[in-house]
Length: 158
Image (cartoon, rainbow, N blue to C red; front, side, top):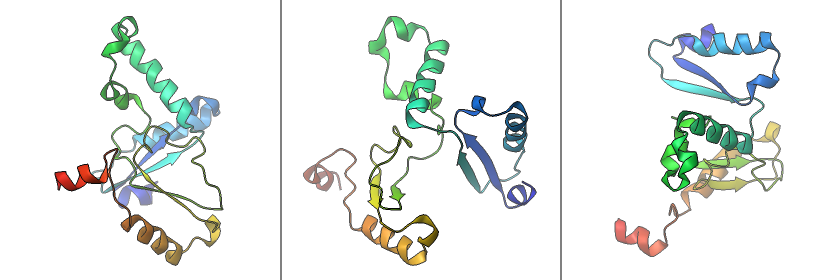
């Protein structure tokens, strides 16, 4: 923790932490509360995290703070829910790399991966080296980022 703090790295832990022993929850709370004078980066650790859990807990927190939305759900918009998600404040990923031959996102960042480019490789994590990362980046660079639009709409907005 001292090395992270000295390097300007803020620690964040997301997930269903209530499942952990009280002592571990206390250590996580202390570690994530450490002030970083000039944060250069945030290291986020997902512990006991699941995308479905995240959406459900966000919805519960939202409805507790804004009960009028339960009475009139048509007032609910994406922007209402986003601040309650575990990764609130973090940018959505541009690239998701899945190693080991699996071709699924496995309940990870379900909300945030909506417009993320997915890259699947048979290479297992321990063997995923700089060359494998370069291949993933090359694949990413070859893609057209449309964010739900057509190619024609992207070209028209350029």
